[in-house]
Image 1 (cartoon, rainbow, N blue to C red):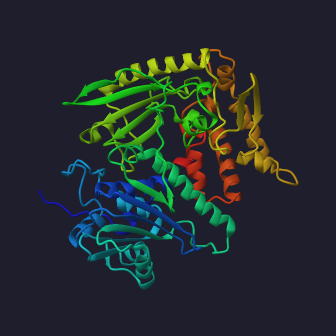
Image 2 (image 1 turned 60 degrees about the vertical axis):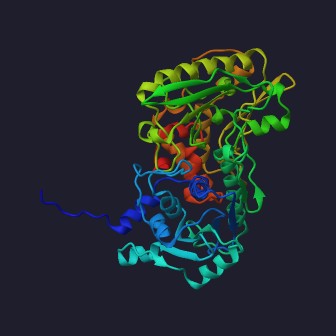
Image 3 (image 1 turned 180 degrees about the horizontal axis):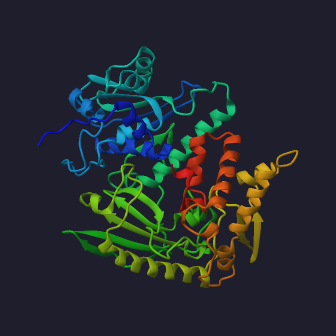
Length: 489
């Protein structure tokens, strides 16, 4: 047959790779994957504020790469998902380094050495777009080279991945204290995310040392597996496709069996409500944290906050589980869904029993103050329900001189749609299942939901967040985390 060569245009491909929806923590986790695959024992993530010249780097003491290996690593999709990989390789598509980096910066420089000789290559997206060619630059410009010399240690092997010209910072000044504070707040988020994703690599005999701006990353065990009061359900090995999927369910202790510090930590980076559900691991790397895998009628409710389930899938089952490029979502195979649902329902019943008969719920008290419009607490046998003054719409409505009428209307609608009925039921130890769905439930957002989301988005941007950070926050903010709208694009 005759054929045409239809090669993708570089600028369009760059735009596509830059728009895969990486958050900054997820993008850095993709780089850390490469460091672990390179058998690094120490991994440092450095954030340095310098206004428009701010930079982020990931430095490891792994095996490093030869010049040829470096060019392969810098080539988009040089190795597809079917390529042979070592047992320690956490990659899949061969685009993680590039797509993660292009989503965050206009310049990606990698310096690597195996035996003392450092090889350097640079992707400058301005150059790619100007010439319409995949021009991988050898070496780096003078200022980047000077920066690399400062970053590199005296070791004769390892890799440095350096991001410069960071997205969202090109029009700021070095003395912009609010943006500087936001920049370092991102470092704290990265630290928390890495502690969750790489817990199994930060503990045990294979322990790595991981730091973010000099602070040791603290592993976060979502299952409180060493706590004497945690309930473990029997481990199940579900056969599938010539292999098996390991599933272990946990019911965490009630709040009264945890110290205040333990309760705060167990709530996780996103808070108790958003951390319940399945935790899917691939080669010990966390892919998905706290999700009910889209099972019909199975949704997040406070009475199931103590239910967490570990699922270990072999890397060979990536296709069957629909592991995406960002390694942040999965879709379970049809043949396993009934078993996962059965385990989920059993774990949820156990968790509900603990809260109903023995526990106090830590509902909406340990999560991000941006997420919930209501705060429900139980203290000294008294239940309180308060509007969250830290929510962006509430802050906008309370500004001196009165809030914008559109903000106030959006706030009122949000409060109407998210009355914390479920939390109050759990607090009062009841057990019903007729809880309302905000804005009509999951799926495409209607006009009302989109209008409220738009006002929240604008309020966050006005308050100093970048547009990308505001959309990312909306994607995790109930009830918009269960909907499709402009924040997902």
